[in-house]
Amino acid sequence: MEPLPIDPFLDTWHEVVAILSAIFLLSGIVTYFIYKIRVSNIRDYKDKYDFINTNEIKWYKIVYFFFGASVAMIINIYGAGKVSEMGMWFYVRIFMSIAGGTLIAYVASLVLDYYYPAKLNKKLVKWRNMPRINPASGNKMRLLSESEEDVHLDEGMRAEENVFQLIMMFG
Image: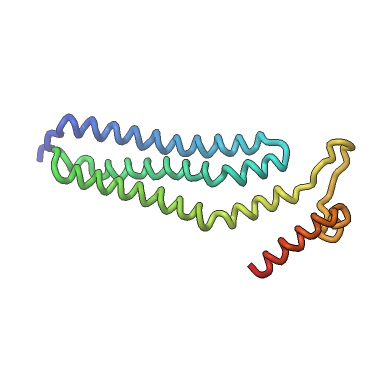
């Protein structure tokens, strides 16, 4: 049986979508590594903590957007050899690819919004509690306990801390 002649538009469409799929996938990978390189280039622990706290979820959402777009393109070219002319199946595949890509990106966004902050907090605690070096003396500093730090607070600061503790206890 002789293969059906393919519409030139569809042939071009499949080639472009395959290329876009690879571009989106590579863009996601490159974005991830750029973020990791930016984090690794920050030497000060406080600056690293602040950068991770304010940017990690945003960067990861961009990565998953690219992955979702790549999945959408892959879904669109699924069964490309079986479709030889423009018709209803072309539009159904476009709809399904948009739905699949949106599902990937949206679920990842929900995970990053609701589940990942707990994981991120564990990472941030690590950076928060890293030993620091005193810039004046060069000596290694240590984190003070609650009772040790109270010695260095004035009366107003202690009162503010007590109010905060009450709020945390009673919500």
